[in-house]
Amino acid sequence: MPELVVTLITGRSTRQGVGVSTGKHSSEYQEAIQTVQLNPQDMAQAGLKNGSRITVKNSYGSIEATCVAGGLARGLAFMAFGTACNRLIGSETYASGMPDSKHVQVEISPAPGEPESRDRGK
Image (cartoon, rainbow, N blue to C red; front, side, top):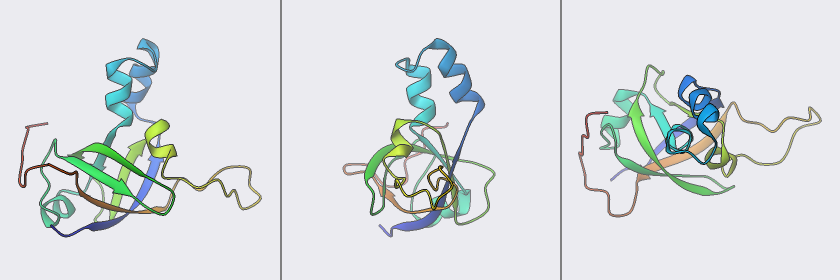
């Protein structure tokens, strides 16, 4: 299965905000911060379907997450702020005081043991 190289952007999401109100250890919050939105064509290119478990990695770290199709341009991925995406963002702030969280290069591939072309209808 080919790896997909994309630019990860991180930010707030409605689902993440709702999850915060139920607690950061709640299933709603954890699901929100462990979901990666991808362009549908990029997903097809990588053999991924809605609900596929994926590995997202770069030189800073690696995580497993669930992917869903989103309204993003090709080559972009979105993930809500949280502990999962923090493992993919370096500590360099380039004198701004804020880590670089808006254009992080990552490689995405099916998670180990993930069947090809799985569609869970999410």
